[in-house]
Length: 224
Image (cartoon, rainbow, N blue to C red):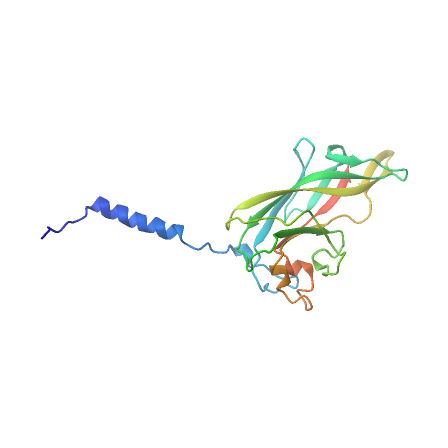
């Protein structure tokens, strides 16, 4: 018969720590408070929001920042001189400027439903913003579906190109560019599967802002 073997205190500590970290590794991430988002009428959304759009950063051709938009600071003054590219003004003085934009997405909840093709980035020039309907033509989609398979709490940057039209006008004897017509004023991010799970025939889900995972408003002007 073998004698009883006792483990030392140090060995016991190692075993306890191993069990602790094993439990930590298998712990299911908890949705962050921001995921408890609201529909456009102020009621709790049926499914939690997966993302927050932390910022939109407009970049010049050399990669430096022209303007930055956040949920609490929507104003972006875009310098024509620092645009990545420009469509020169025509005989009516109307042209366009293009900027590279870096959108920073932060995951705050796991998806309620797995995406089919990916996440969709869209925008509108309609003054109703998040209250636009699902009618075709009320918004436009940017690029292809985006893979955003990252853990809760992490961020990912997505790049795209954004264009704004301008016209030349004389102010105080100086020729300046100003926005021409309606400008893009909000960007949406949505799960291509979850967005279809809402009853879009009824309020508040007949409005785009209630079915997307996140949106960010932007108030743009174009300067010299």
